[in-house]
Amino acid sequence: MPKFEYAPAPESRSIASIAESYGLFIDGKFTDTVDGRMFKTISPASEEVLAEVTEAGPADVDRAVTAARRAYEQTWAPMPPAQRSKYLFRIARIIQERARELAVLESLDNGKPIRESRDTDIPLVAAHFFYYAGWADKLEYAGYGTSPKPLGVAGQVIPWNFPMLMLAWKIAPALACGNTVVLKPAETTPLTALAFAEICQQADLPPGVVNIVTGAGDTGRALVEHPGIDKVAFTGSTEVGKQIAKACARAHKKNTLELGGKAANIVFEDAPVDQAVEGIVNGIFFNQGHVCCAGSRLLVQESVYEQVIDALKHRMEKLRIGDPLDKNTDIGAINSAAQLAKIRELSKVGEEEGAARWSPPCELPAHGFWFPPTIFTGVSQAHRIAREEIFGPVLSVLTFRTPEEAIQKANNTPYGLSAGVWTEKGSLILWMAARLRAGVVWANTFNRFDPASPFGGYKESGYGREGGRHGLEAYLDV
Ligand code: NDP
Figure 1 (cartoon, helix red, strand yellow):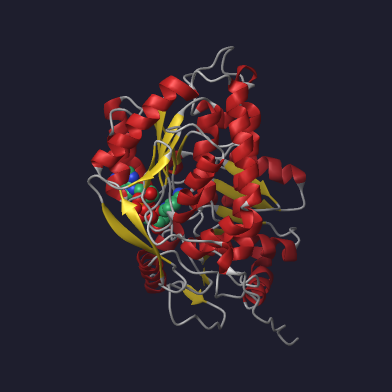
Figure 2 (cartoon, helix red, strand yellow; figure 1 turned 180 degrees about the vertical axis):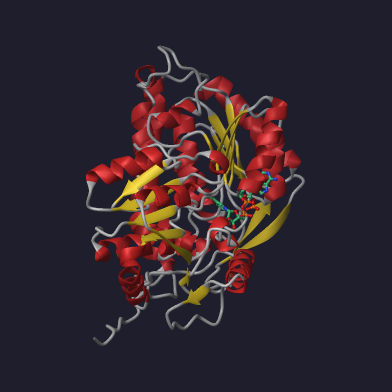
């Protein structure tokens, strides 16, 4: 069948206005740095400079924490919970109203396809604020005592893969529980967090309740180690997570960590192959594979191996890679040159270790950071590409014969964030789910998120839960 050709359908970028330069959002205002410096944020799809952003120094972080403390003691914690709830509902509504603009901004700064930022990221951001707005005045029914208390000032550090969604996962429950926050977005994706600062102003949120300090790892470290922080929430690499866990243990700070993953997506012989292939594609190529819960290890039952791989390759030939703002794009840009180098390096190791590499023929844009959708077959459990998080559009394929073998292989990882099971048998789904050491197990679907559903890991994937009633615990003194 001839391949269907699509005319370009770019979303207009004029809906997102980007300032030339951004200060830090402290105590309800954008302010200049005291001891930091400026850096540039670029579009990973074109390497074009989007804006100049502030790298906050320790004195800036201190100002932000001081503002958050004052707001906590004088305004936010004493406020009647129903009032807090109103602010959160207001923020959620403004996010909905500005959804198109925020989606464009996210795709420009992060490189993800507009179809994903428009249909997944930003709607989930609004849903998260709506969900926790509803909890704010019902905390005594959450199962954490009759009068649950907030912790104080939360220091929150988030990564670049879902910039605004991770902000929502951190800020919405913290505020609903009566805490104030200082948040540091990732160095490569600060723009939607700065837009969120404007939304806080638009919502008349009292000054100091939300503070945004942009910067890199040093700014994150200064925030985590600041003595005025009562609780740390981090999403990112396991390596940095371990450093943060140590710093928090030394200072007796409560902390929650959401770290890496190497999830198994397990396809049994009775699974509907076409649906499973959609789930495999969604599991590893959604957001260029920059997903902590990505289904990066495909485990296929031996009896259907060839059928599944043929169907997968056929489907991958149809994936469109290119301009993130084009509504037809399936795979956008890799977020940074450093991440691209890591993906290239691990893919090279995969070949050297003897696995067979395959990508569909596809043209990559001349500028920016790109990596084609790739699968490795003939992968063994000892291979680095089966053990390490690649965090890119690269799938390692392994096989199994029995459910017991699938469990052994799926659990043979230091991580434990998510897993997927594809089968027609409900009993097998339940049998597998009870044995998989993963915080989330999807059945006949993958990468599904809902604000009411808790999310988090086992082992080196971190501890604590975000989302749902469980997500409140991380921000309450229980
Ligand atoms: P990091 O863990 O370094 O980044 C996450 C956040 O932590 C960023 O805001 C970062 O700032 C900040 N940070 C970095 N060092 C420190 C520190 N010592 N103290 C406090 N905060 C710090 O992830 P990378 O961006 O370096 O990505 C590396 C790998 O991590 C990826 O290839 C991927 O495998 C994994 N990863 C996993 C994620 C997940 O969701 N589980 C998300 C992102 C990455 P800055 O961005 O400026 O460095």
